[in-house]
Image 1 (cartoon, rainbow, N blue to C red):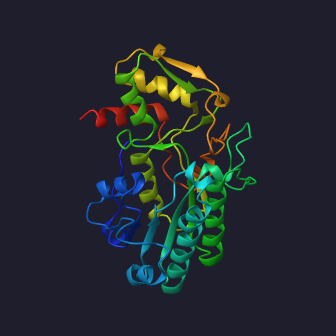
Image 2: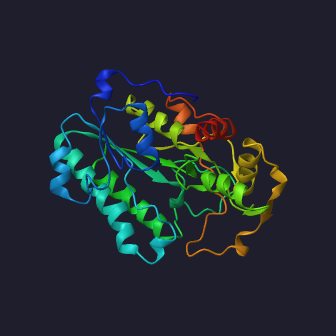
Length: 289
């Protein structure tokens, strides 16, 4: 998927995006600038009255709002569960009440991260962090309150410009002679623009399965991704050195393996997302301008 084909007017006119100030919400707005979209400050999805005032019959609600501070969640569980369980539950109930459709964005963190093969949507969950548990609780609330909702799990999302991993590597390349990056965590880097296009593709396919995975294809370690960033901006990738997760302890444990399988997405007739290296090349080109 190299570029989004905007949905027809009958779909675009029904779209409502929450979390429009985030990475994916912002990309959705870039693709369809005149869609109804709400930032966190404009719409608190935990506020039932506020949500019910904006969700209309026939809407397609793309929920990109979330509490995403993985480490801070360990010391702020109430805030994490409010943003990732209560908010989605309020949205799901509002959608079910008026006959709107909900597409809810979730994460690889719902899995234990100890596998060796790409996770399928039906694989057993088992989050090891507060963030992961709050996101799983949100999934369960959505399924219970809005049975026809669709949940899309993704992973390692970046734009390259918003302080994310790719943006950080771009910055560190200009500040340091060398950078050490963990090479024992494996996942699928996902360009937010491609994920936004994928959500628009799904918006036109209400018959697709209830739980899907959407990431750029392929797999990499953070070390691999960092080296690809350096190479992509014309720097020497050998300046990126490997290290272990144990050398950089964090409050929240990171999954050792979080590759998500795109098989169900493909089997549903949805457009597969392109390889992560191709997406990264476009992201770096865009970030440089």
